[in-house]
Length: 459
Image (cartoon, rainbow, N blue to C red; front, top):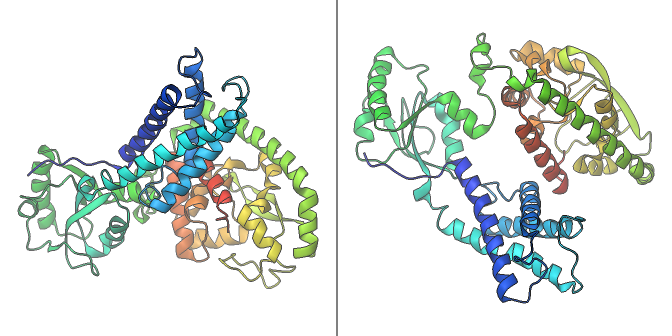
């Protein structure tokens, strides 16, 4: 078996960041020394501070405008859009940062040069990335082993994720129109990959006979000794979907779901509460500034009260009143509580704007300030829905172990859920967040939320 080089997801993202920084730094150096660009002079004693600030802004806005999203990075149009927006906002924030950035040049054309240096060389490098590094020869080659009903969804994900090559799969029957099927009862794993460069084998033994499992284990040990990565179905599922698999919602859920160490970290909890207070104060100030405009929009497009409150279930099942801006018609639930759906006809014209921009959530900064909610966490549900969901979805109440949030991992990954099946998927995103909770994941959710607002992807 021939070893194969490949780039996994994290390596690709690191590669993109490093080369982005390297490309525009070299471009700045060349422009400063050989062209008429003197805003950033490399011989200046403060050059390191200037460059660090520029890198900081570029990485922040790169995250916001999805410059390091792998699906964005393999499309020319989205690459140009993301690079241009990142360069524009990096330039604006950079030139208006006092003391740390260089003094504004007398010739304002230098600012335009900075924008062009931050954008065009990076676009060229990203096109080269798509041509060379994004080539399938650098994808991870995988083999799936398991019952067809078990691996069906994963195979579809692999076909779409642009990071894996599906070399083959051993199963009891063919999955739809996906190529690479081998009958697990007839074909040996060793013979299948003897002349193939495989980097990873994903295994699910559920439903397989003990005879097949014993035979597989012997072959997997030999592959492991040769350096092939062997992972379970559940581990691989989490890696590519960023939610816990359905199998974790069993009687022995505690075998798979650990309460993140950060939940018991005083330093993390203090930092989270401090961030909540700071964000909520600024959020409420911004809301007060916007209120006159919201009142006008409400009179024209809503015709009724601007605010409304609802009872929600918070941490440890405690109920509290949540505050929002009204986005639906009056008496929208005269026949009882129902889930909101995409393109809900109860939403008013102004309500659509409020939801797309997430402005309807701004009053919840008050809930955050008084401690009912946090900036990041599972979205609080209504008691009527919670009691029903707890009956139909095993361990639904687990999500209430942390304080509910203004935005959350489920919100940025799966905003709509109006059936029990969809609510279960959202729960699995929530459980992934609780399991992996960290300052970095919180920051990632915050960035994704900002992106949702900027591109009007709110529900």
